[in-house]
Image (tube, rainbow, N blue to C red; front, side, top):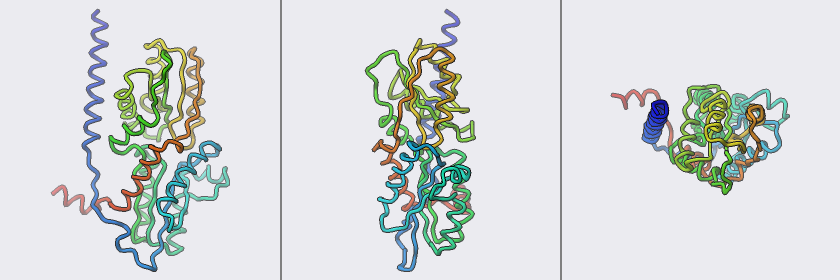
Amino acid sequence: MRLVSIMRLTKILIFGALMALYADHATAQTAEVEMDVFSAIKAEDKVAVVAVHYGSTDPVERQNMEKVNAMVRSAFPDYAFREAWMSERLVKEASADCSTPDNLLYQLADAGFTHVIIQPSFLIDGVEMQCLVSLAEQYKSRFKHIRIGKPLLSDMEDYDAVVNAIAVPSPVAKEAHVLVCSNTFNKENGSFTMLDYALRKKHSEGWYTAVDEGCPSFEFLVKQLRGQKLKKVNLFPFMFGSSKSALDKLSSILKKEGFHVQVVPTNMGDKQDVMKLYNEHLHHATKFRNYSPREMMMQVK
């Protein structure tokens, strides 16, 4: 009895910590100021809209990335469209008709473009997003304006919308449904933990989040599944590009542990609510800019 009580207390404490983290994330405000990038465009200005992906050689993942490309094109059909991949290795392997963001921004500046609007297909504000923002900062002096849309999961409303779009209730009991995520080389990023909380808020049982070399971990997922006495596990890739290795890894772990595993193809690009969020982030970037370091200091004062 005492052991059960301690376990229940531990669960309550973890749940409380997640709720606090969720609330803090929900109330966090982006340091930005309203400034429409199109308000002062002149006839001689050149505008480019850019879709940035991590990159992939997988045909299905390439199709998903192309859905983001199509959304970006249709959002601003009067301007030049470009595509960039973060992984230089994948650009070479796929012989893709694109380049890295660094090379692309150099090319755009050299070609006389004055305004650049970027929408990444990143899911969270991880290392890839931070690298992209840092790169844009290096090139900002070569353009009149350079803006970057937020990743998919940025505000708490985003988490709820994504869960509603992807985690559809299953009529089959005693089956686990797992959103499989890939790490962003930053294990301290709490975005996928936040996603797991949003998932559980919507579905009290049956749905889980598992992150390759992140949190919630694959090992923790196994413990949860055993605790719920679930044997059949459906894996849903939750990523744009580079999903095969994470899926294969988790599938192998689960099969060795005796679970029956099925990978459910999930075309993120076909989820209208997901694409709507990307579209909203893209348009938001054209209407607001982030504070400069000087402005941030003034806000502190």
